[in-house]
Image 1: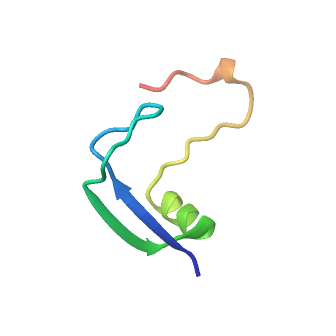
Image 2 (image 1 turned 90 degrees about the vertical axis):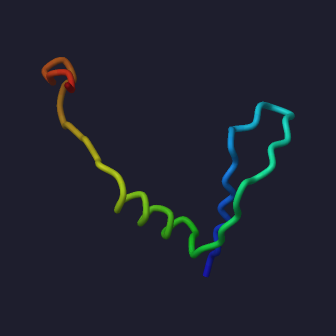
Length: 58
């Protein structure tokens, strides 16, 4: 079993900068768990073929 620790920060730190978290949460994770959550909450747009013939997205 894998456990992920999720830290929320107000901003992304710059190189060498220290940023304090605003909340900490732990939950089930690991590579498979993270992929399952991403698949359930994402939209995949794919096209097979040449890009020249694909109209631009609105």
